[in-house]
Length: 478
Ligand code: CAO
Image (cartoon, rainbow, N blue to C red; front, top):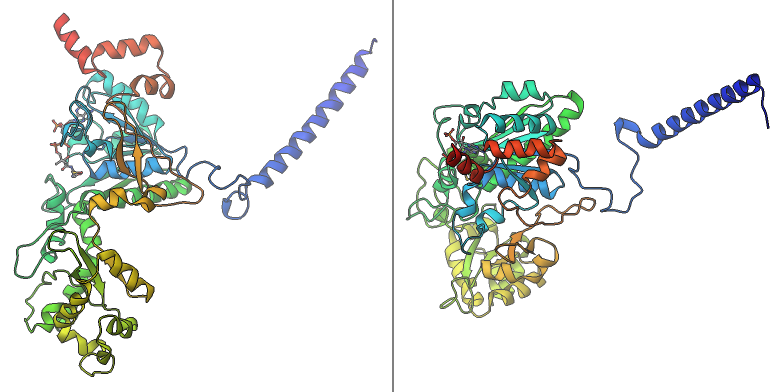
């Protein structure tokens, strides 16, 4: 059927207006669907756990090594960020080879801190390596590093350069100390525990300062850094620009030991009555003393022997004489008269007698296993905690069930246990993946993330910027 030109134009323009109307309507509909008050989208209708992960879409350029930085970036990866770990060709993170338990395989030190990440090898001092890094800087949201002071600058990756290359980039660093007399010092875990005030307040009064097995300097600071990064990402939504985030390990440890700085100030107003040395009549000096196993809060506590303590170094329980359940404690240990005896009935009356009280409770705990004490005390609301060995924790079914302890498989070392995400989120569910092999994702990242062609990748490879072996071959050829 033939149609006149005029009619055709009419039909065309009619359909054009109609489609414009539809587009307008669609735009209106999608706008109203997407944004509500405060710029927050309407609640997703997807089932919980299926609306992506918390940090999906965030790309981390991870220059971190050893423990502090990797703890931070592993947490970000657990939350869904794409963490691209940059490692030196042929060498990698030094921990890959430290404390090796399986010959030729990456150590547990490395694998337990680098899950859910991708690894790319780049010599950051090689001109071609610098080119690759520039593309990565343009593409990523956050650069994380915990090199010794000045190292990043020596690579040419100054804040000025990074900020100019990608003004949206957040540059997050762990250093041992903040600005001040020690800012140029290299720092490891125990140095931070000592400089952050934790060691001077840990241990027994008549012994030397002690460090704790919990890595409050490394992992603790990594945690602080992760918090700083997520906050900077949130602020960037408003400002559109990146910023520097710095966590000094000394500051991180002090933040975790802040109750001891509290006690330091209390000392000016008299003795610390909840410290057992007060009950023992030992005067306080000018600084907060080591408090052994005294409870950190206002509720006196101590570690007590349980059945089997003679042969099992972990047959102990932490016992807290919480005031509201004092009556229940007296009944359990066979001292009902202590409920009304003026020497024991009130918390202030008990303070000078804590050692005697705990010795008496211990006579009872020694007749039970730590798990029996746990069951009996919890039934009457007495707060206690068994001293769990790492063996017991590794075997604890409830920790496996919650994903706190996870078994993963690794191509060269086989199955290993790792600690999953300690933060549980109802809409961002963590899947724990094994740590990458050195440079496992180099080609994938060059091609898919950075858009290099096969020929360009071959050229980068032969330049020696990404593979140590090629570098050797090049040297041989020269
Ligand atoms: N390509 C080329 N060179 C690389 C590279 C890469 N991809 N990755 C690292 N390097 C080089 C660095 O440029 C540096 O070389 P220069 O000193 O010649 O510039 C060298 O490797 C070593 O880096 P580093 O100084 O950070 O490492 P170190 O072993 O000397 O010190 C540590 C380790 C941890 C003491 C130090 O990094 C530090 O104090 N970091 C800050 C505090 C911290 O995080 N401590 C916790 C450690 S445990 O988590």
